[in-house]
Image 1: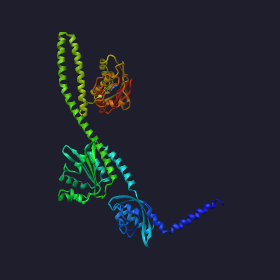
Image 2: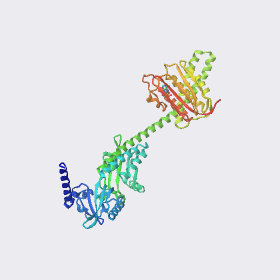
Image 3: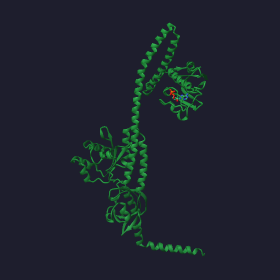
Length: 551
Ligand code: ADP
């Protein structure tokens, strides 16, 4: 019992204080005056009471700017219907309305996001509403900005096309941070407006008209030309009519500027490889928003990312141009080389016949070596031509039913003459015919066997394995040579890809054979792969779809 006494005392004291507080109007008033949240009482649509938090919330200077004013004056048009509905319900049902998110508008015209909780209340004998309003603009802004920047990353990395990238920038900005967004870029023609967007796409033509009638003066001390020179951002919190009058060069321009209803502007430089290459102009108009420092940070962040995306797009287009020039050169060079090679071959044959008549075996021997080298050169030139034909989708194919086992035996027979050091073993057989171009398959197998010989200078054995399953036939060429590092294995099928041998051994080649082979197998509906152990050897395999059972 003893120990309960202090508890009872505490409880009775606390209830006494509570009762006293409840009857103390002074206490309530002070809560309202001291809380950082906005507290507002309104009745008949007019504000009757507003605490200092409310004055601060709507960016007013004193409470007089609020008392007696219509509540709806401070509510953004998007939130008006919802709030009217809530007020009606509260007054008729006398219920507390839970916290909801709404958009308010301050006396300075800025949009703010708030959370409000409201309760019906009798104020000076009238039915009123007491609302507690909390500013959540900063939190909303952080959330929206994070989401915006992650969207920006996705969209800006989705294209490597220069024009699309510029259009993506404006599409990102509108409507998130601007009613208007314009991208101006430095080009060989001067300053060009390369992308424009507006929340209402019908109005885009106004911006274009404004620019057409008033091209930027390169010596202007403000705006796009100045930013391109200095690389410095320009920021206008408020666009006044006085500013429009000062900017407009004539009545017509002034009229158009007024029609555009600009309220705030941010102009941010776009830097590409440390040079100011363009300007993004963000304009707030119809929304009536005035840009804040946070908006500026976001605009500058977007411009930074835009600069990187533009840089990638430019590099990509330069690389594409270089590739086109290279491909055109390869096509031309290989055509030009073919004619003299054919002549050398023909004159060699005439010479060979003459020497044969004279019985000059020593010179005939040299001539045969020369002929072999001419054949090698012809093969290389043909490969170059094949590569360029593949790029233009012009490599010809003549499909027929092919008996691959016989084809493999024929090729291996020829290859046995190429390297006397290596013994080529054939294991298994292909029990189905395939629909293929025998010349192209010959090309693929020759390439695989040539590589197997070339890249296994220390070995003396090569295996060719043939196998058949339900839908595919498979051919594998295995060597016991230098092998391929895992990092390079997928890339060996790329055009002109060659691996530098760390042991500095020099293997001749141009990195075309596997690219051509891969393309050929692809066109046959098959697939090509490699398995390799560095230092132990490689296995190159390809499959081809089979068509019918052989007996
Ligand atoms: P190349 O004419 O250079 O041999 P390929 O396209 O046939 O061109 O091969 C591309 C690259 O792949 C070669 O330069 C070589 O580095 C590697 N490679 C191809 N086949 C083998 C193999 N059997 N063993 C080891 N490396 C190989």
